[in-house]
Image (cartoon, rainbow, N blue to C red; front, side, top):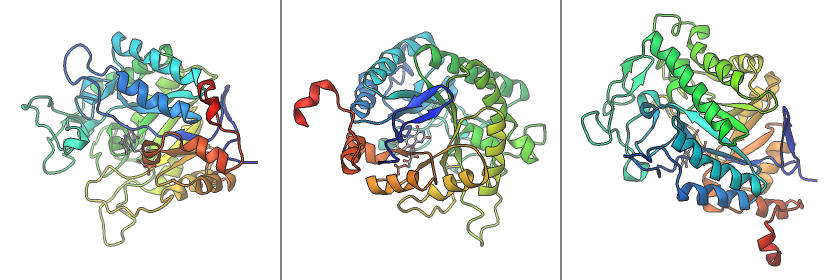
Length: 366
Ligand SMILES: Cc1cc2nc3c(=O)[nH]c(=O)nc-3n(C[C@H](O)[C@H](O)[C@H](O)COP(=O)(O)O)c2cc1C
């Protein structure tokens, strides 16, 4: 029996296996005009191929809750009816092919207003075409090349919580069954959480409780509109990778902070911690390698009751099987390996002696 191909039930939702597609920005929506933020045929084909390939859950890329919250002008968004309507076609297709549709709701904060990654991904200044001035907890630029963001007022923070709620309502109406709040990779929520990026002196900065306030307000507000029988995920960067380097004295978010946060998230109704790392400090030195973030997922599993998903350089079926079978995570998320091979889950199923999930149209191939 393969642990990787056992279903996982969270609240009232059963996800058919534990091989999931990680959220991956495609920078492929129109960058201007009425279709800004609207998913296209590219998104349908790209996501649909991974459903046919056997992924149990597909998390749609970071989808902005406001125009200013896009990483690039070509990001997906979910702040209007047109966007919502276009997502329904995608969720229907994914469900028809046996995958659970999920979406990551995001705000890029100070890392907003950049170019598509394959054009270098650099910052675009507010006075350039397709650029705007980002917002953040504190007026600190991500790098020397980035625009210094405008510091958010408390009223603006409250409005952003409502923006997440509005996007969550739209996600539900569009047919999504999982919503993931993007609290990782140095985007807005992560910027609030880490002392490296949050220098506020009001109730949203300073102590740990104050720095996680925005995250918990978003979680509470989204949880209140997300059905009780459907799960809410939170993606965390388990460390800023600053304190791992002893010679580095900059203060950042740490693995201990992640465990503390995980306990809070559980109490606030989050159902799974998607455990990533990094992205908040441009100068951090990250040690990567096969499964390099699994220890963070395992740590949260060991010290809390919150289920976790592991992500990062998971590429081999037996490696994935071992992560889940050993109980270090409840599921694995694959990103780049699923770009290389959309059929990876079905290939892994065959390799591990489980039954691949094949569309009827392909029955003659097997
Ligand atoms: C093209 C691309 C786009 C990505 N976009 C997102 C995103 O929208 N949201 C997110 O949380 N992570 C994003 N990531 C990070 C992945 O979800 C994943 O955490 C990371 O690539 C490590 O997993 P891997 O080694 O399997 O690729 C992206 C990664 C890639 C390669």
